[in-house]
Each structure stands twice: as C-alpha cells, then as structure tokens.
Image 1 (tube, one colour):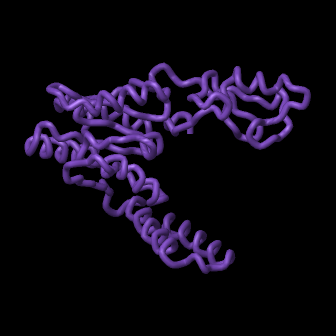
Image 2 (cartoon, helix red, strand yellow):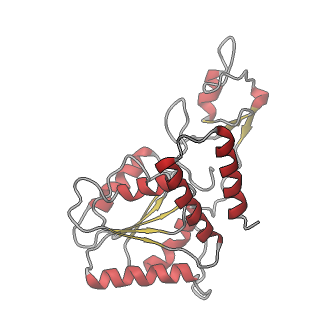
Image 3 (tube, one colour):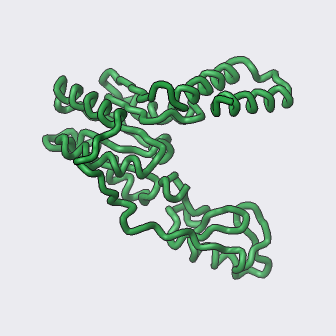
Length: 253
C-alpha cells in the first residue's frame, strides 16, 4: 500500500505518515504520533483499542532512493498500452492543443514510469499521488487548472488519491490505464472531471488488454453493477457463493 502510493494518512495527525510505523494490529501511524499515544497509563491503538507496547511497533521499509526516478530506456520498446495512450494523446493535441487530460492508474510506479515518454512527446506533465502532502496536492491541482500558454496538459493521477474530493474540470479527457475491482471507484475518479463547472464534452477511454485478466475484471464489474441494481434481497449464503464464483471466473478456473 505504501509503495503504490495509496492515499494513506496518519489517523492521529491526519497527514501522510512520516517515519512510518505499522502496528501489530496492521494500522499505520507517524512514529512521533504513536509514541505519544503509548505514553498514557493504558496504551492502546488509537483506532482499534488493541493493547500496544513498543515491541508491537514495526518500522515500514524505507523507500529506495530511486523509487521516484525509475529509468525508462528509450531504446526499449514501449508496451502496446503505453503506445496506444501516446497515440490518443497526440491525436487529441492535434485536434486542440489546449485540451487537458487526466490519466488514472492504481499503481504509483506506473505513473512515474509514464512521465519520461510523455515529456519526450512534448507534453507538460504533473503527477498527483498518495505520497504527497495535502499542501502539495493542492499546488498540483491549482497548477493543472491554469489554462495559460505553456501550462501542463497531462495529469498523472493515482486512482485512489485523486478519486474523491477534488476538482479536475480543467480537463476534458480521462484515460483509465487499468480496470479496478469496484466500478464505483472508477466512477468517482471520472466524476472529478465530469462535474458542476465543466463546460466541455468529456471523453473517457478505458485501455484494456485483449485476452487478459483485465477483460475478466470488466465482467466482474458488470456483475457487481447487477448486484447493486437488484440483488439486495439475497441471503448471506447466496452472496458468499457469488463472491466465490467471481474469484473462480477471475482466475479462469
């Protein structure tokens, strides 16, 4: 979760954790915040109230210094999905140079890897992910909203970190690099662009690899939508059976 840049905040200070600590009950805190909590007479986890001591705290693995700058060899052939994405972006730019696009991915490292080929193609690029502080995210969103000459035209956004609570109506193109289990998460992400204040037609593109697990995830999404539309009357046993069938279908068993 930490490496993929999920939108993680310390429950005590409500900021991205510094010197990240993971408790034995699998909760994440800043080191200073959880140590302060343990100074009370009967120390417990601030979230689940599980008894805690210093021996129950574990330091998260330190990020490699190269995490934010992985290399993307220009000599290496780009994947079909990245090539297709670049073609779509270039086509959109040729139609209207001022068109802004948001590219959603659930993997932070994928967003980082995309920066180099996009910049090489002449796009102004910004990135928004869960590793950033609230202040930094606000600065990125404000910069992306600038429509002046030379302003960034592509925002690489984490599906979860940018999926709710922000306004991205400066863009009119949305690209989803991978399907997510829960279609509601994708809907929330798209709604950051298609919401009150949007004056342009919004185009959404899903990039799906043929004959891959991504097609089966799309099938699962449709089944989930069907459940939401009319299966609230199912008994617990029927719901458990449905989930098992979903997993078997996903793994093609």
